[in-house]
Length: 92
Image 1 (cartoon, rainbow, N blue to C red):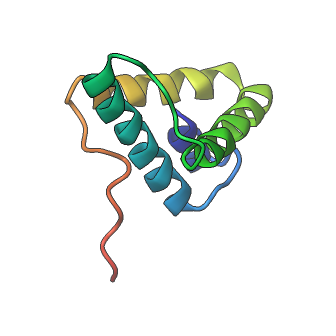
Image 2 (image 1 turned 30 degrees about the vertical axis):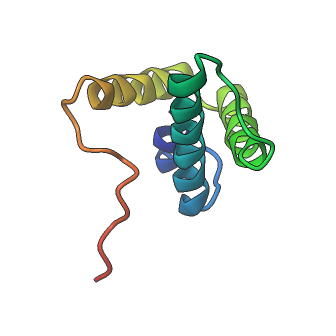
Image 3 (image 1 turned 90 degrees about the vertical axis):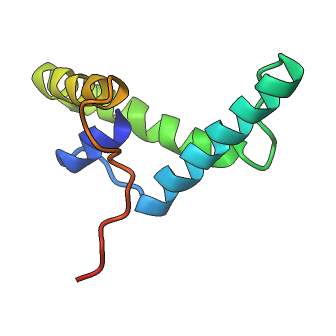
């Protein structure tokens, strides 16, 4: 949701931060699948913390209708109705 809010003009982190956070969550899910224990590695924690800090800032600044729109976009993606927002744009 942070990415969608950022695209609306609320906060900013580099695109790579989202890519790294996504990879960090994938790592945590892989560990959980093997060990039945949810954990985030010390190596992955800082990037997740950065996105969470951004999202906290966004929620304090964005009007509710923008948060609702970002949530809608996220739900459409999760339902398989939209392409991943984290696909890096092709260079022109």
